[in-house]
Length: 267
Image (cartoon, rainbow, N blue to C red; front, side, top):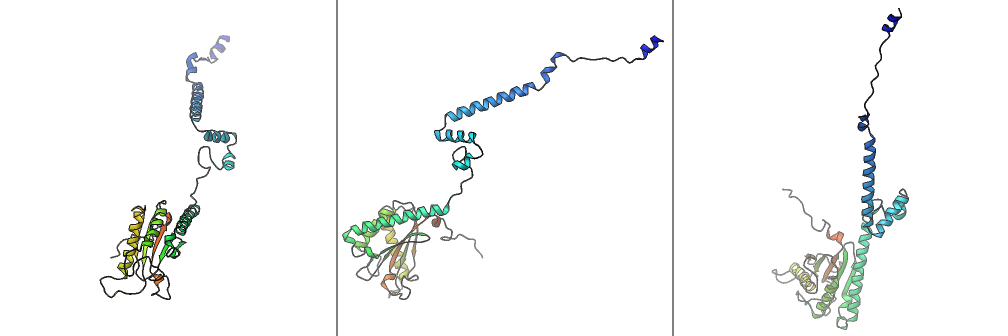
């Protein structure tokens, strides 16, 4: 009976794994991660050693207080800003206008010091417009004129003034537009009109400006308006309507498509 009970009991077999199973565990991954981290730290240190003191200070400040450093300093870890910088268009335009005002002031001072320009220097009008610096050479009468009557030939005093303007504007890299205007006196011949005269006078001014330092790449346009835009609207025959305007464009005006529209044919 006792032998029968022993035979009825189940036989339990316990198998033990060999000692080599540890090689297939995850311990090596931890060691590898530590190695990669150490290598990254090593290369970071080597990169930092070769940087400027400004960058070293920025990196140190960032790691000491990463949450607030960028806001306090107005910059990120490296050169630049914690936020992308948006160009301040108004500030750039104002800076450029200030440069043009300074150029106008220099032109005025040079002319005032030259006794040979006493007759015409007060007829040089300089104003700042939305497009830039506008320098107008305005006739007063037949005795005080920049060009010979009905001609594109510059008077000696006018040549000196335009030369001074050219030498000063050559220090800038702004584009330039030159406009020619006349009064409403008409020619007796139809072969040569105020359109040709205004354009020829603008071109004569361009030639002299380039002779005194203005490059051909700065010349953005030559415009002849005839008598269409009188300075003295109530009297189109007034001598002061005869003038040449030198417009020094700010860069935003030079890039404006309003000056030269490119479109598609509608027919």
